[in-house]
Image (cartoon, rainbow, N blue to C red; front, top):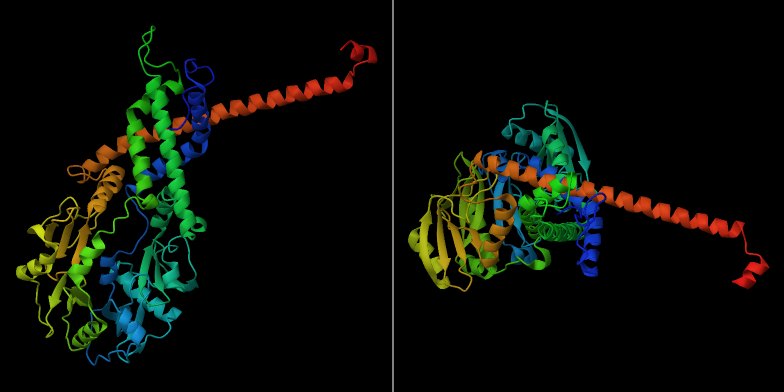
Length: 524
């Protein structure tokens, strides 16, 4: 079955003699692959139990927003003079507070870390030192209800919990708090932004859950290509192991003259039976895990980019600059944490983002100016939608996972293109929230559906837990028993090989100790 060969085990019936050399070769590969891949699949299963209740530690965007000081633009602002290259690359911005000062975070296109400017001077924001990092972390800690002072602040390059952020935030500052949970908040030395939070419990469960489940140790994850290749090919090996195990299990299943449905006994019998029950689920989980890595670009998509370009339009650097000038004249209310630029249909509008994550579009005067249905239909008209409707609840492709909730309400449009693309627009700002093309729909059902059993009717907890826990337990038994059987069989193979080599050495010594006489040699 999926983690070890059932074909030939000591004390158990061998595969029927009618099986050809290809079948036997396949079983040898399966048996030996079952040691490494079977153990790894068992680790994936055991860490999956932890991942059900604790994912990789993260500071979520709502938590970060809650940690920002309310936006205060009194006496502000000096609009920065961007050099021509930056002005041409400007693709968005947000205005928020950093260490008591209003700042501009300018986005310079995809893949760029952007730049940060002090709006009290119009100049690039200065260096982030450890004292400032400590103050930023303290305010973020209050939003997270960490009622303690920083115990220490130290600069680092990266660690286990920042490895995926390190390059764009270096140097990093790790701020440890003197609380019972031993909380850490990480602050970017590049832009002063708090971007990660962990505590002792999350770190422990991370080592037991997300790190082994994603093969995420720092030494591997810091090399993105190597990490991707390792995860992809180990998942391919696990899929092959499961497919061959299912084949062997089905071939050996059937009623015999003694009334038994399996030729195996003991642990091999239970592996055979459990594998027949849970083998298909094992395959769907390891295969969908492979697909979460988007191997070889199979679910790359890309059909959303032209759609987004039509909806946002080709906003110019001058339009962003005008929006920035408008923002400098706005007096935000006490709930506003950010002002953000929202490109819509070739224009750049401003939206106020509140500390709870809600947004409202603003007129140039600063008054609320929510997007209208007529504007939405005008934006979507070039895409020739077949339907447009206002959603006040989640649907199959616009929904939250693991406690995250998407912005609602939204406008949903289904387009008339070959991919039946779905577009979701924020009902307050008109901002593009999500675009789901054909690959996006496949990705939703393969990655989230199969891997997380994320289906309607199962998503509600504790119903999901009651279904997933016994299924995961069964798959774990399949992988663990198969790996153990492979270890035992290979141990016997090694022992047999050792005896054969010892016997060969003994025969060789005997020939050396008793050489043939000339007469014997002549007779031979």
